[in-house]
Image 1 (spheres, protein in one colour):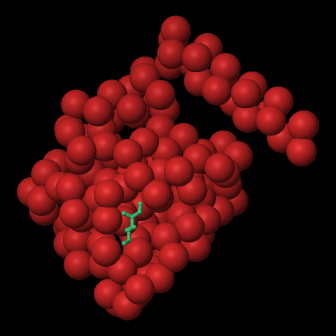
Image 2 (cartoon, rainbow, N blue to C red; image 1 turned 90 degrees about the horizontal axis):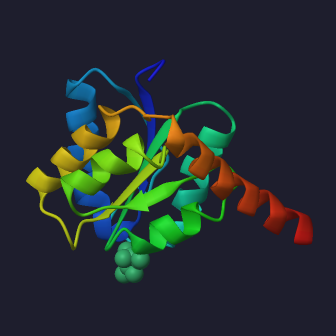
Length: 154
Ligand code: RB5
């Protein structure tokens, strides 16, 4: 990464885990842009997915983290945004490989799925791995081409 700055968001189901993740990232020297939510009060996860994705689209951060109950709703919402490749992960191999091969720019996971120790390992694997490029670039470009084709239909 060029700059150690990352955007993070969650819904009510993941507020407590998000606080731990933020603390962990800060201890590792990352600047963290927290887009909310700010409590365990019920809220709608797409709002926070959009805020993290917009930070990436606007070039404020290269990477983002989105946490909800499962990580699934967040990843679905995030992947509706142009240029966003969000991966819902609950194992460290996938969190590493989605950077290496898919050039994922958003990591999603669920507080109701992973414990704190695994969550922090997911984060570490994600932020410490760079995209491998090479043959994988062509495939990522093909994902972008699908995105552009769909945008033209709208
Ligand atoms: C909220 O209850 C829950 O649906 C949400 O956090 C998430 O798991 C959705 O995918």
